[in-house]
Length: 375
Image (cartoon, rainbow, N blue to C red; front, side, top):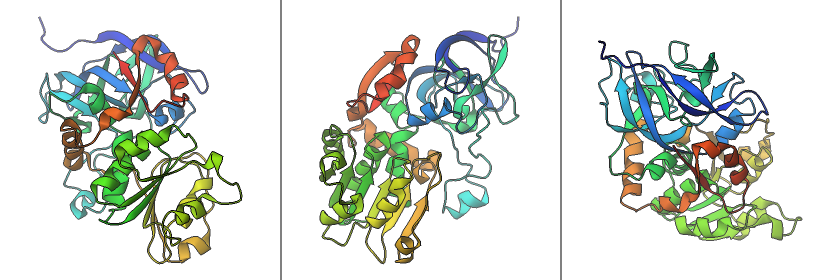
């Protein structure tokens, strides 16, 4: 009798096409191939990128098993896997780090050339490990975490401490860490500096948290939801701008300048993906040295003002906040585990996998920051 892993039938959340919502289906999850692991998911969480996946971004390959944030335990592994063992707790990753390619060696970017982001929903060999109703299913962001079991390339998982809170581990697998890295690794916020964060989702709260950790003395949060004020303050925000109650005659950049000595802030982090906010984020920084980091990916094109950027300002884009998963994520995980980062403040709602249809509805709730999905 063979001891090799066999296919597993389990429950997972599937989107069948653009605008068709999400349904819980029976998923057949194949055994892992040589360089892969099969993970029993403990919990997952909802990110705005999951909503984008139902809208055809970054690809329109369906049926698609959704979810890319999560944490689980290695159930089985391929014969070539050396970095983890069965029973290890791991976080799935959308991007990885080889440490040997030109980009990794130079250290200026986290866009590893050997282990890049794959946007087609397939494994490295361009096949899938999942089937639904007899059809090939695509892995959302190559993770497919909204499923009781998933198969992931072993180079795209990070082993974490077994004592980490599962929900907190899920939060740092994408959104929060993306914002945290934008302030830490991309903006490289300096002690005593000023920062404006546009959008106080989990991404924006991550940027606020890192700015505080780096020693920024003024951290301005901007959000159209006044209820985000309390969350922002919990992570270190010093000032809050609620545009809906302020004069429409003043652009957001002017409101930021009024809170930062009229000169503007040293750094702005744009976390909404709204193209109309890009110039406002840049204009909110000081002339002759202000830096703007764009974090969220919007579907629309944005028009840039040459006058704004020619006045000595810098505009940067990033993936995963510039975080190198193997080198940098353990630091964030440790800070959360030791409660030096109040990661628990993100957790506002909880559902079970069978109630997944409620997830996107909850994301529109004004009190919602993060929805935890229990398997």
